Length: 78
Image 1 (cartoon, helix red, strand yellow):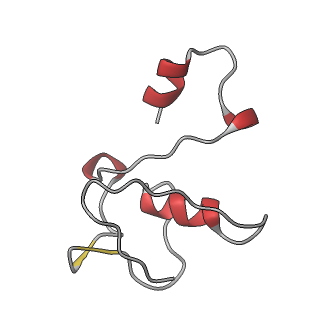
Image 2: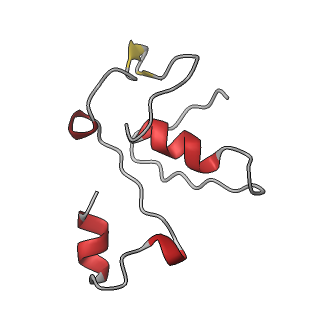
Image 3: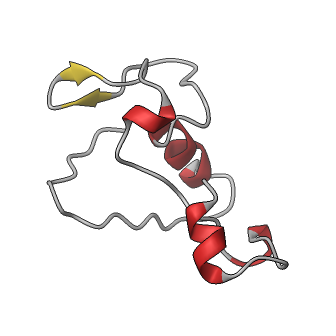
């Protein structure tokens, strides 16, 4: 995969089950290391940075949310 996300852009991923949407987002948010390839941000190596040093996060849809928590708490959780 190769794509450019501009500063301030909002990314949405669509595709069938098993196409790698969640895997890509988890790598971007540092929840999963890439098994191969490189993740670059402004041409600098990005895949070695800790999650707290990245400006990305992800929120699952539907059943992956914590039902006992508010919307705000679910968003703040990661």
